[in-house]
Length: 308
Image 1 (cartoon, helix red, strand yellow):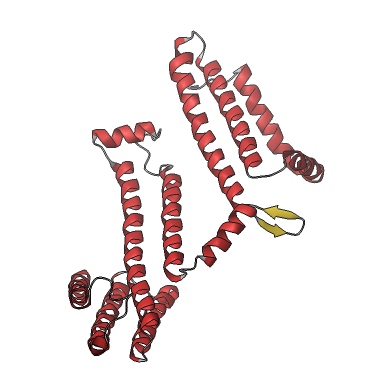
Image 2: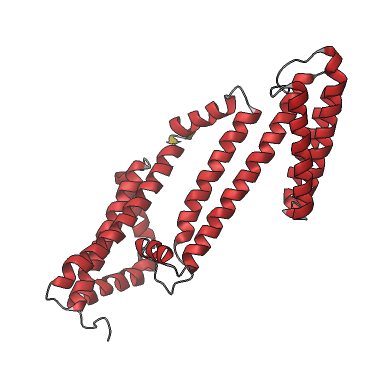
C-alpha cells in the first residue's frame, strides 16, 4: 500500500545518502579506488534491492498490470543489467543504467503528480463555489450550472505539454549523444516526405493552436459585442442574436482559413477538392444545405424569435 511505499522510499533515500557520504556526490559518474570496489558493489547491490522493492510497491499502488506490465519488466531488467555490469567490472555501464533508472523513476513520479494536479484543478474549477473559482469560470465563459464543461480542451493541452517535456527528459537521460532528439527535431521542422508531399508536424501543430486561439478570441468578441454594444442599441432581441451569430460564423471561417494556411494546406487545392466532392455527394448533402440556408433565413427574417 501507500504506507509501505513511503517506508521503502525512505530506506532507499537513506542508502543513497549513505553512498554520497562514503564515496562523494558524484560517485556514480567518477572512478573510485580499487580498495573501495567491494564496498561500491555492496552499496550498488543494496541500492538495487531497495529500488526493486520500491518498483514492486509502485506497481501495486498504481496497478501497473496488464498492458503496462512491460514497464515493470523493463524496470527489473534495467536493475538486473546494472548489477551484472557492476559485478563484471563495467562500472560505467552500471552507473549509467542505475542513475538513468533512478532519474526516470523520479521524473515519472513528477509526471504523475502534474497529471493528477491537472485533473484535480479541472474538477475544482467545475465544482468550485468560492469567489476565485467563480471568477475563473466567468473568465472561461463556463455557466455555473454546467458540470461537463469545455475544460477538457485546456486539460488536454497541458497534459500534452507535460508528456512532451517528460519524453524530452527521458530521451536526454538514455541518449546522452542527443541523436534521437536531433532526428525527431529534424523531422518535426523539415517535415516527413510521403509520396509527392511533405508533412511538417510543427506547421500542423501551429495551425491547430492558431485555430483554437482565434476561435476563443471569436467567442470573446461575440460576448463583448453583445454585452457592450448591442444591448445599448434599441433593436429587437432576434436581430441582436442574428448579428452575434453572423459574427460567430465569420470568426469561425476566418479562424479555419488561418489555421489551414499555417498548417501548410493549399486553400486553392482544397477548394478544387471540395468542388469535386460536391459533384459526387451533392445530392446527399442537399438536406443539410437546405437546413443551413433555412436557419440563415430565420435569423434575418425573424418569423420565430428567441423566447417564443
